[in-house]
Image (cartoon, rainbow, N blue to C red; front, side, top):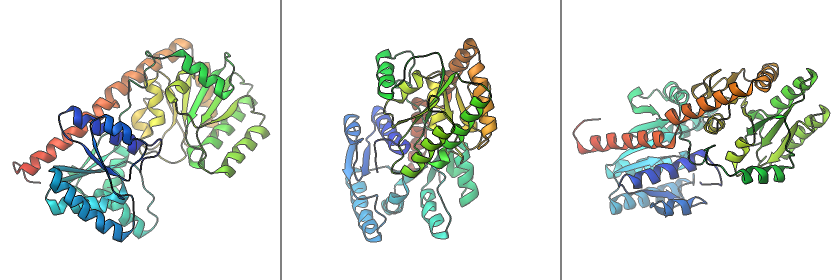
Length: 378
């Protein structure tokens, strides 16, 4: 359930820590994972159960285990963050008479009635938290549940981790050395995304080729991300880079564990997803680092980027539009770029910080506790 990276897993830890800081108890149930140590350090209790399993027999056993846990620990609220555990968790919560909430953090594939039913399990709690207005609209249109049961709470960014004012330059130097990049005067664009077609790497390579054709040479695109076994796609990208003579202008640098440094060593960020993002942290994190993003103008990204003030919104899938947007960024005076960066961090601090996200999530918990007390009826 918890790989090295992932918005759902990270947000689980963030909210768990906020619950403990607020004086509550946090019990996290999962199959275990690499963020377990941070949960324990933050004061949470970790219970290992095979809640990731889709096996009906295992699900049935999970219901009993969760009911026993809820009763033993005096749990007041069950918060579900993934589809596989949803059925067992909501069934256990209902059987024990406790309130429940889910976080709906993606626009799940629903090409068959069975898959749509499976996805709908995330809407069965008392409340649903959507990670953007875009996701909230999708939930309401797809599942036709009462609007008052769905609230949009955008994902929060750790402003202490993504802080351009508290930064060790040696980290940038290490990253440059690891990536084989010599310091120069070129404008750098960083794109943080796993290597998969819908993330838009091929689109940016085509846009870079168009820039070169216009005589624009003073740029470097750094594509940070793992192909997760999609070697054919990686090879197609390398071939496109070679065929377009972009070896000195576009580099695939692999998975990056230090994205704050990657943003700090760049001037701009690219977020060209071909499909709408449910939230799109790669357009938000660079703003926290004073780095204006160029982002595809669809999905939740239109909620996170203020065009012309904190970054640019670009037509999805249009290589010509992306080339033009990148050219505009390359030619932007340094003072204007700095002003956009300042505005971007202020924007993130006001709307997309961890404090804002955790505070609003705790407000949902408080509302559910009031309902549970019987002072108001659901």
